[in-house]
View: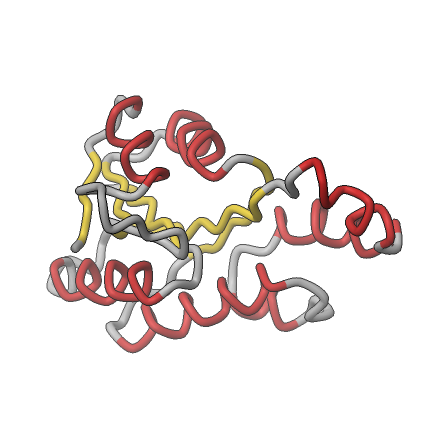
Length: 159
């Protein structure tokens, strides 16, 4: 089965990765893809985003899309938090014997996860109950709630 594991680098995402790796540790034939979505910058902060060098943005958008293994990530200049988050997720899954692929996207996290799920023809999506924007009021975080509600693929939420 092709499994999409979503991460934002938070404690909750790391727990979801570790727990799901334990669930599937006896079934190594699964294809694991770890996805990180770089959130869009809010309009009031666009000024700061424009300050970044055009080459840095090109690297983030083009080279990260092609990074599928830890070797690919090591060859990139660590100019982005995406590289570090995906590298950490990759290393975490390696501890459980999984050699995963990694993908990065930028935009609205829930929209990009839904697009990746549809385009990648996954059999299962795994994500944490919350990310960095944990809300104590809701049973699920904002991104998890939107993905569960709108995804055609089964979604496993890890608490």
